[in-house]
Length: 453
Image 1 (cartoon, rainbow, N blue to C red):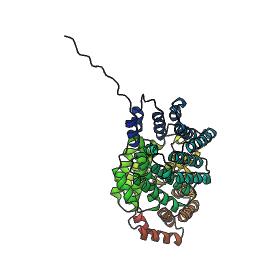
Image 2: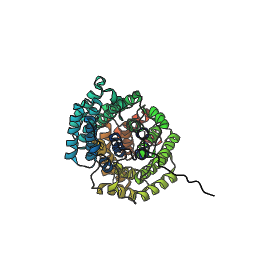
Image 3: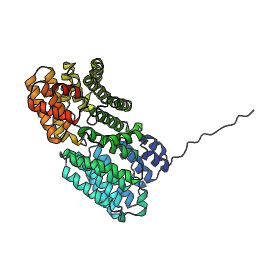
Image 4: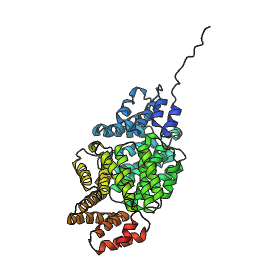
């Protein structure tokens, strides 16, 4: 009896399915869908997916000149090459590609693409610490992206709709304002970014995720009422493993928003969601630290000690020079949490932080802000207090208090004032604790505040 033979043929790639996966933040799936698709549009989408995955080398390798057929394609090719080169540190090459991209986009009368080029130029300038140039590029981007009468009909089907360009530019302007210390403007830009994205009518999970993350962080730092809206939207968003880090940061920030309102159950639940999204050692250390600090303030000493032990052990396994982004700052949080129960471990965390010599990714603009120095002062002050070096502790804590007060980080200033009050630093700090207690009577450290006020 002859057996039937079934031939398995690989499913051909599809640009349309690749674009749908791209907008769903299923970036690796997008790359799979584009396999075998040779058109320039597929090459550009492949590069965009690699850029979102943080793989600039592959993004650059996927862009081939021979597929380019017109001015618009040349503009997108140069723009994406510029973006990839900027992330690889090839600054001269990136700057040249961006200039070419603008020329091609203007020649092709492609206002939306021209606006996107300006966005990338702004991001490039931010990475170089050139804040005025970044603002100028953003202004140009908004001018072009908000001029719909200049758009060819075909542009309405672009991978990145003009509204999404505007949303990302608003985010970038917020980062620039934050780096300059103008946090009110940063908050306004973060809110506008989410509103513009919502009004676009085109779903892009990656864009929405970053908009939610940015607003969640600001809601935590300034105890904003936006936390409820962000939490509800984050709960509905279809998070994917390709944006796990964004998911982690959003959930972790929202956990502290809940803790500031006295909702410990919600805070722990959000920390659990963050832990589920965690993919790196620094993330796991940070969540252990968060739980430890919450447990300590609630009087659950054994839980706090166990979490600190886990965090210290995990932190010892990592070369923090290689920590991605700004995750090296987790060492400051670890030092603060460990100091009351493991002063030696806390001092070790500070020493690891101080020993880092590898330059941080320059796109993390917060590194040039005063608030970073306040975080360092606070961590040193807490560790010095645990070591019994109270005069030195007071100086560092007073510095943190002054900085946080000046920039409007009210609850953090109140937290520093609590530590200062407990070491007898003066009535001015006790008064600050009373003000904080009146504003946030149910915050995670309200019990300690009530005892000192």
